[in-house]
Length: 311
Ligand SMILES: *[C@@H]1O[C@H](CO)[C@@H](O)[C@H](O)[C@H]1NC(C)=O
Ligand SMILES: *[C@@H]1O[C@H](CO)[C@@H](O)[C@H](O)[C@H]1NC(C)=O
Ligand SMILES: *[C@@H]1O[C@H](CO)[C@@H](O)[C@H](O)[C@H]1NC(C)=O
Ligand SMILES: *[C@@H]1O[C@H](CO)[C@@H](O)[C@H](O)[C@H]1NC(C)=O
Ligand SMILES: *[C@@H]1O[C@H](CO)[C@@H](O)[C@H](O)[C@H]1NC(C)=O
Ligand SMILES: *[C@@H]1O[C@H](CO)[C@@H](O)[C@H](O)[C@H]1NC(C)=O
Image (cartoon, rainbow, N blue to C red):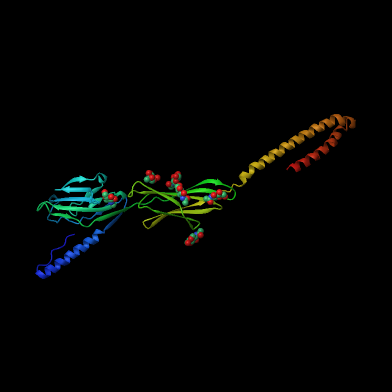
């Protein structure tokens, strides 16, 4: 920022100058804490502390844009770009008059304090203006909508044991993960991964649940004052009939085998009776049919009783 010169008369001039110096200092102090917020992917401009007057030209200056006081992001000398940081290649440009550094698209890795250093070449080698105002860049990134998956690990008639996972990725800064089971808050066993302290985070929450009835689970990713939520209905498995079916099926087959064996035994017995007993008692040819009926009746009733007893 440029502080206009004070009025000429002596006392007023000194007073004025002092006031301006104070003003400049306080402004500088205020700017020192300046934080510029942005979202990953956007274009952002970082203001420089010095502006080339309309009568001047970039050819008369050296401009260094530094990050974290150690890395040179972009440097200009005598109107030409002399240096550009590898990480910022094709993403930065500088306004040739305001010396604003434009970054597009901005990344979370760009986070940190920036500073511009301006040197006037025409008049003196020592006329260096170092901005005492650091501009802090704070880039945030949106998290993806949380994704909930549920996996049945075991189940019985009473409950279904599930492994529930909630994940979200690509956001910055580190988020909070919270959950609710039918409105009752629940704590996820959370883990965060990030390649570096300034890289986007992936977050995963894990939960082991015994589901005794259908229940709704909600996962919320809170970050930067905003929350993104997803809900999933966890269904208790209602296939209690399934495990009881195979045994009953076995009972049916076993009992039918027993019945078949009984029937076989009965028919064999009936044939034996027909040959050895009925040949003596049922003499007339006509009454053979009736005799067969009479003789087979008792075994039939015994078959019925055996059937009912076995079931
Ligand atoms: C600034 O650089 C120093 C040394 O290279 C490093 O330890 C520090 O973490 C950096 N700070 C930021 C905010 O990048
Ligand atoms: C959620 O995660 C599952 C398993 O990792 C994956 O198959 C599915 O595509 C994901 N859904 C979304 C919307 O990302
Ligand atoms: C959950 O809580 C909110 C507010 O606390 C309430 O409006 C809503 O009806 C509740 N839902 C259930 C299913 O209890
Ligand atoms: C959370 O998960 C980690 C790794 O999977 C495990 O070591 C830890 O015991 C779990 N904590 C709780 C409270 O379940
Ligand atoms: C985060 O998740 C994304 C998408 O699932 C994946 O491509 C990336 O490698 C993950 N990052 C880390 C640090 O695990
Ligand atoms: C779920 O219930 C089974 C038995 O009913 C028990 O062994 C298991 O520890 C329970 N799991 C959880 C997470 O409560």
